[in-house]
Length: 448
Image 1 (cartoon, rainbow, N blue to C red):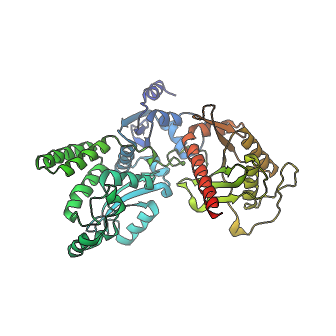
Image 2: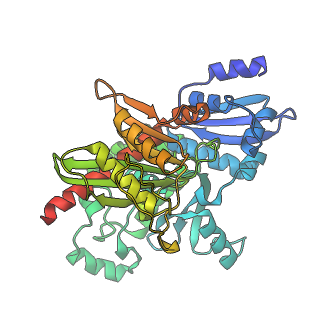
């Protein structure tokens, strides 16, 4: 590595922002976003050379620039605007249409703000023509690896976006609603300005909600805050104290955005994910020796795949043994991949029945267990007995039950490096498996 690159890596800040890679021709070849610039950019310059385009890119990089942002959301916006404007070579080559999303704003009387995936947006363009926006007043993006659900939740809080189904009604209808309609949940929480109850006109909604959002998505947060501060002062002078307080709270929220979950860390953020496309996470929940259940959750490149979650009511285990329960869950799961289950005496549950093709479950690239060495050892025993060579890792609580401890089923150097790089993602999978198991366990209690 060139000396100046080494110095640049050492000087990278531990802060959110975007990074820009340049080649010997001083061409911008890649733009990326990061929750931590230091950690993210440094990760590119570890490991061995491969033929994947995004890793081949590293050997063209001779200069790195970066820009710190106040939040991850602003990094996402800045990255999207830079890609759209510059079209860097490796952003185009590495593009995964499944993980690229747009934020769109409709032309309705009360504009609706929503998200579209790349393929949905492409279909819309075919229908309405490339030079037109059709039903949309604004289209922002694409945003690589955007967690759309978390983003919309945050934007709703920051800009008071309305989800009211009555937003399209005419003025006369809205006046009638004002007398009879109950405020929606978001209005009761102070996150809606009263579209549902007719307390705000379309013109006011555009001025107070849509215009600030558009300015923000164009990357103008600083100008927006200046504008909002002036509006707050004007509202205070006019003794509109409720509006002044709302603007004060909005400004404070914009100045300290908490948005760490906005980037899908399920591989989209990290293009160097070593071919991992599917993770399965497992957990066991019980009340002593009764109410024993297990859970299986699935994550792919776009995050949780809830349609493929599975829950298991433990059938064969007597007494309290999380290890035995885990074994039963894994064996029952493997039956659905047409894995021949041996009659090895160490694995008690046997099965040689072939599943119909429609019931076959895809095997993961990584197995994740919520548990320590006993659980990992038993899970590895099941996999070895079935002739399965898929990496497995467990997550256990440390001595003080604060720090997570990663337990490896196999000592593969590349897998260990991958786990170390994706700890946040794996903890998220573990937590989701735990949540799903607890929820099912509570459901079984209610049925009794």
